[in-house]
Image 1 (cartoon, helix red, strand yellow):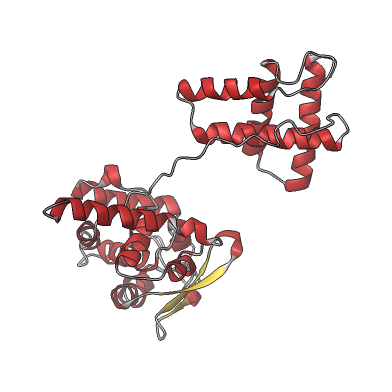
Image 2 (tube, rainbow, N blue to C red):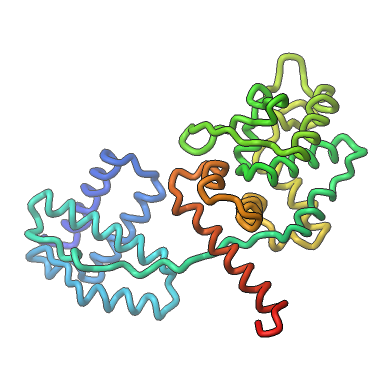
Length: 300
């Protein structure tokens, strides 16, 4: 490497290469570019006459960032960018060996999802005034979300022709366009059927729409609109600061495990491709059990 400009030119070639190979999102490419330019300006690519990554210098750099409060997830991304860059440099014949082969990235801290208690869920479910059309629709939305563990985006995309009331199942299209069958359960089935056979028919315009949950104007609700409605009920209960679009999904999974569901069953219901993604909820369930033991056992 003969100059800083040469280093930046190589980084741009690398970014073009991984875009062509992996089709990464622009935000990811921009993050990698910024990380690598930052490393280059800090002297990680040698003295200008050759390409060199000094591992001890890198470790000192990472330690300084950790002490300064940098997020572990950011440091892991930076190391990932540097690893891929070094691998690409080797393929291009610009590095003789991988200087990061023995480097272990800092461990990502385990962030447990917050969940609502079962009593809080019951409060939320019964918040809508079901004597009104809006309340009936919102009750059906809440019941379906909690009964199935759907993402809010999946609820917004629910189609009428994917609901089987006779069998009590819905076909859900999740991430990556993958379909899965999810049971509704009795309560969600009944509320959803009331909505679909009642007010929804009055709101739907001729020939459209096919979405299950629609507005008074007959248009399918967006993810943002659904979340706004849920948050309004949570705010009235004083739960809004503890509620996120994923909170009912987290609560669904945790409560299923609390009541003895098999982890692989929960994985299938949530549409997780990897069981390790679902295992986070076992930590939540364990934490809840420990808390209950400490609060209620005489020697807790």
